[in-house]
Length: 89
Image 1 (tube, helix red, strand yellow):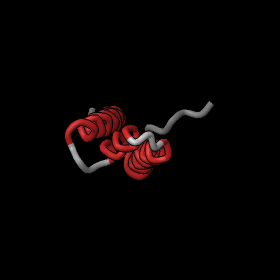
Image 2 (spheres, rainbow, N blue to C red; image 1 turned 135 degrees about the vertical axis):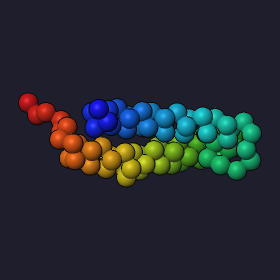
Image 3 (tube, rainbow, N blue to C red; image 1 turned 120 degrees about the vertical axis):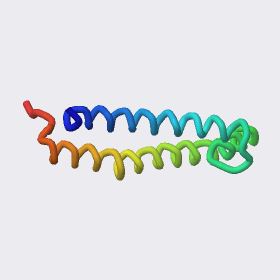
């Protein structure tokens, strides 16, 4: 039963990671004096579009890197180990 549920557990971890990043950035925007969320707010307050865009790209890049380095490799190893490869047409 566990091998069949592992891909769904990894999907849940990915969703949890995305939610955590959104909540952490929102919390940084409100309460923290140092972080990406605070840099985003500072750029908005100063009307510095370059800072806002750079912080948004950095947040997206971190998300992409975590997805690629952690979750994609985990999904690939699970598919290879348990034989649940995606069917090709």
